[in-house]
Image 1 (cartoon, rainbow, N blue to C red):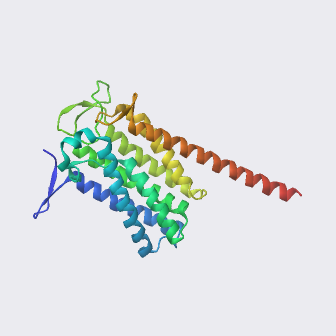
Image 2 (tube, rainbow, N blue to C red):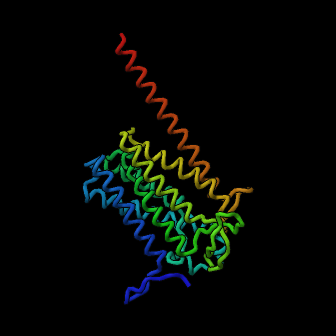
Image 3 (cartoon, one colour):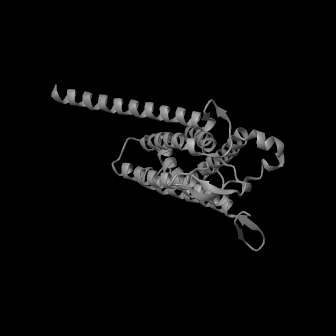
Length: 262
C-alpha cells in the first residue's frame, strides 16, 4: 500500500505531493536566483509566464519519455498512461522538453537564454532532490537487488521489499551536493551559462554511472539502458561546450594582454 496524505475531501499520494513540492521549490529557487542575477528576467509576471510554458512542456516531456521507455508495460495497461500519481516522470524527458520550451520562450521575450538556463539548473537541483524523495516513498526508480554493505531493505514499484542498492538515497545526495556546488560557483561570478553546463555534465555523468545500479525496467541498447545512452550524449555535449567556453575565455584574456603590451 502506497503512503497517502488524507486531505479530508480526497487522498493525495506522498509521491504526488513531493513531486508538486519539488516543482514549487524548484521554481522558487530559480526565481530567487534570477532576482539576484537578472532583474529583467525576474519580473514576476514574466517569470510566471515562462514557468507555465516550461513547466507544462517539462511535465509532458517527462511523462512521454517514461511511457515511451516502458512501453511494454503501458501497452498492456493504457488506462495508466494518464495516471501520473502511480509514478512515472522521467528526468531526461523533462530536461530536454523544458529546455526547448525555455529557448523558445527566451527568444520570444528577447531574454538571455544562458542566464535563464543557469537559474533553471539551480531550480532543477532543488526540484530533483525533493522529487527523488517522492520516488523513495513510492518505490519508483528503485535500485538493483544487491548483497553489498550499502544495500537497504527497500521496496520496488510493486511493493516487493528486498535488499537493494539505495539508488533514491544516492540521487537525493547527488542533487543536494550539486546544489551546494553550483551556489559556490555562482559566488565566483562565472560566465552566463556555466552553471547549467556544470549541472548537465555532473548530473548526466552521475546518472550514467548510477544507471548500472537501477533495477526498474526500461529499454536497452546493448548492455546500456536507453537512459545511459542519452546521459552519455548529454555529458559529452556539456563537456565540449565547457571546454569551448574556457578556450574562448583564454583567447579573450590573451588578446587583452597583447593589447595592453602594445
